[in-house]
Structures are given as C-alpha cells and as structure tokens.
Length: 199
Image (cartoon, rainbow, N blue to C red; front, side, top):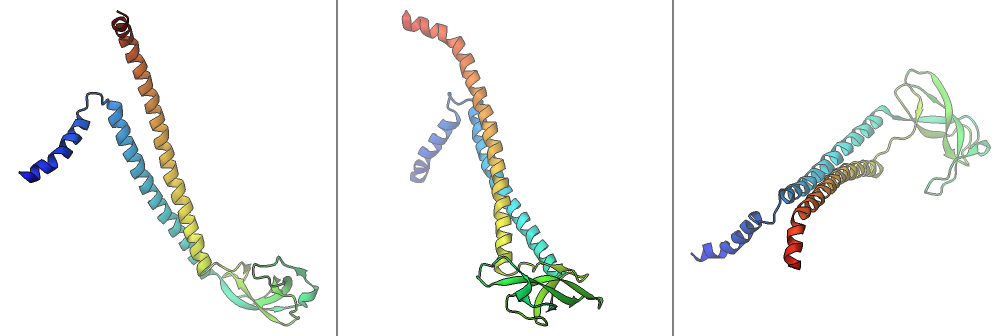
C-alpha cells in the first residue's frame, strides 16, 4: 500500500498535465515537434559524421595505396633553384629539378623540394602515382586522423544544425498559427467579457 501511495502523486501530476483543460492540440504538436527535432538532429549528426569520416578515411587510404615513395636525383645544385615556401619546421628548402624512373622503366623529370645546400646528384624522396607522375605526399598518421575527425565533425554539425533549423522553422509557423487562433477566439469572447466587466 505504501508503495502505491508513494508513486501516486507523480502519476496524478502526469495525468493532470495530460488532461489539462487549457491544453490545446497545438501544445501537444509542439511538444512532439521538439522531441522529433532533437531526435532527428542527433541521428542525422551521428550518421552524417560517421559517413563523412568513413568517406574521407577511405579516400586517404586510396591515395596512400596509389602513391609510392621513390628516390629522385637532383639534376642541378639546389642553390641555383627558386626558394620554396618555408615549412612549419623552419627548414629552408627550394624547388629544384629532379630525375626519377617511372614503373615502366622510363626516365621522368620534374621539380621537387630539396634542402638549399643539396648538390646535383643528391637523392631526395618524391611521391609518384602508378603512372610515375609526381604527386603530393599522402597524409598519414596524425594528419590523416585530423582530417577524418574534422570532416566527420563538420558534416555532423551541419546535418544536426539543419535538422534543428527545420524544427525551429516549423515551430515558428506553429506559433504564428496559435497566435491567430488566440486572436480569433478573443474576438468571440471579448464582447461578452467587456460587458461583464463594465456592467
């Protein structure tokens, strides 16, 4: 008996809310709309983040599989080459002409970064694709993880934000409709209310 009495007040409060005579249909619709918006926002954010992270991770893995590090020989002294943008580490490097051998055995030439004091004949590491063309070094390790996480976070936040914006727009329309209903009801009640108040 004591157990039933302890649970009763909460149930009474819940059913009073459900059976409140002032509760309108639009109130119930708004409550469900807010719940649906939150659920959709969380689901879309999670699905979007996982899909984007998976796509970026697969793309980076494909780039790593298609790229190969090969040794290239400098064909000129690096001191005569144009300076390259300074990397974050602060090392001074330049763009210099290099020569390497493609997978089909043909000699290829191009430009690659090398230390400013490197001399002709020195070997530097370059990255090539399956056809032997120069490509940029594919991201790996922490950089690849960072790109994957950032892509997932960006897409997830965007998808969740769009769901929240859509819910906000629908709720705004619902509030406008409710205001119009209140004004319509007040036009019907106001004459009788005024007459009662003024006698």
